[in-house]
Image 1 (cartoon, rainbow, N blue to C red):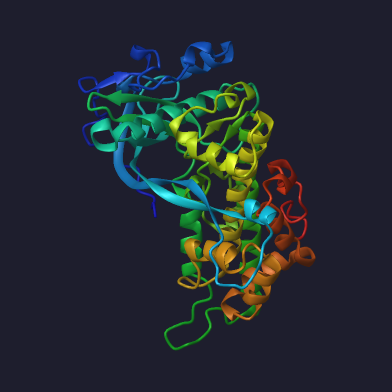
Image 2 (image 1 turned 90 degrees about the vertical axis):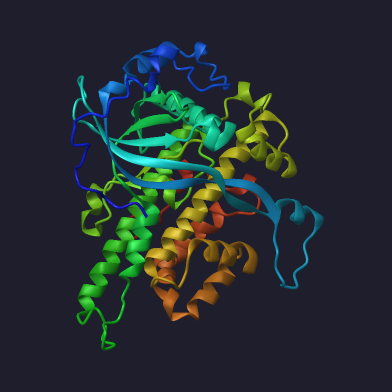
Length: 421
């Protein structure tokens, strides 16, 4: 978990990069060795956006290390593995696939920082540092280049950017590390929120007494939690809808890839979730779907083919549905983990319960959860509106990718609008 650190920077002022770095501008944004960003064909809007990037290393001050993590991405689809005596037709077998999610070998470091000069002086930033090829291999360069390219595409739009982390600039060191500077809109993730919240969930005191002696206090806490979780989901899905509207897939969506500006449930009205981690993002413009080249998207198109998606239109639909499935798993995570005591449920066990034990039959899963007192608050949450939460979750995790809703449809669902709270 990434925890907040005090406003702290190197005591001797800005850390000078002039002797160890090269700027984006010096290399015309083609600074990722061996990677063709195809930036020459960008529009005038992109050129304006490119000119606004801060690419001089001396324009930044770097503070303390605040965390590190590995990217999560879908590595393959595998068939259901269960001991249940259930028979499927050959058509079902082609559709019943679940996502195998793996953590890559590239480790990302995060630093606090701020802009030292120019019109954005004193603006707080978060540096995402990709290792050089000697440490991270070619994959690290490809991921950094892809993340830059994704933000280039999304931030050059004339529309207001919604619920996405904002790239302000960056540079490359002579050792090959790529430093991307993002506006600091929060150090916490949805995973941090769920972990902290579950640790406080109705634990008994040292003498076995209930934490809430006043039932109204418990009721208020649950109401706030429900509102916060729905507001979090709204923001994440809104960011995904923006990406899809601009011909981009996320492909690494999960609790750690949603940044929050607050974890205080009483401040839910001010919560602004933002998507980050676009290293595996995929361009789904039809012109790119003809070739479907690129090592980072190879697994996606292999899964698309195995699901019967061959034409550019089918591949695009599959990719969007693949993101929706990941959003469904995020929905399930946030519907259960914050409403359960720590240790009762985790991300991996929840996904196994959904995919392997109950094979995405959420009606059967609900019956199972009802029998466990530790899971009752999660069941009650999804039961709102005569089971509208289960209904939406079932749609997002539909075994047939063609029947999954779009991000816009998810946002307009009665459970997601907050009208039921």
